[in-house]
Image (tube, rainbow, N blue to C red; front, side, top):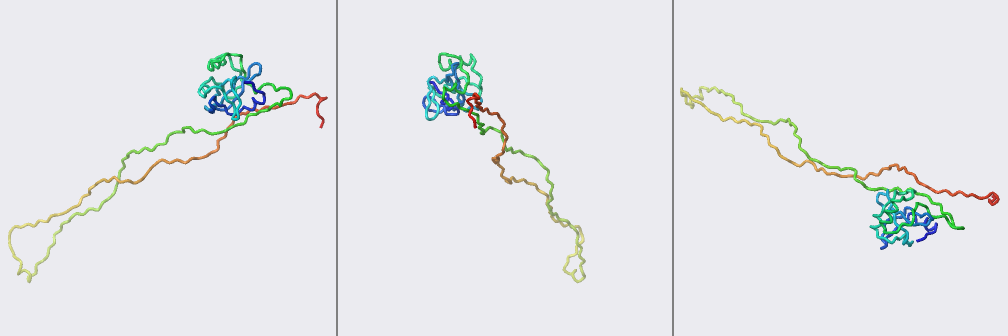
Length: 244
């Protein structure tokens, strides 16, 4: 597949699909051979964003939805990868691994490029990186409730009753002695006494419902990174420079 500079530039960030039309990821970079012809594309598959899988462009085609390669998703995702955003040419070992993975015949060492030199009269495309900041969810710890038993001393009081005995003496008047039998001898009288004592019992009763709950808190965290942008300078002979 041969791409013009405009076509190659237009692919950055576009979707990459496999032979069945399923999305694999997005275009990271276009890699060219020694002659400047696009030969490889690096694919951002979304796996933490640190690596980009390489795929050949020999049978790829441009579609309305981006770029379609002639391989399935698994083959591309399992292909040798490069660091995201690298400009370093592929070394010999990487080239051998790529061609072995895709069962291709090596044709030369590709290098990272932003398209080939434009033809005469063709527009020069200036590109720049845009910082794309998102979020990902990750475990931040585990919260748990644990119930355990503690023993504490309790001091309280309880009212108790008991009988106290005392002797009552009532004189018998002469007028009342007529109906009272007077005996001389030994005798005794008994009275059953009652006393209360504290009795302790324990009841288990529910006193509180406890459960874990969470609030989602949004806070602003600073993100610092570097982005690259291209600049275009014009070199125009003085005699041909437009006067304003």
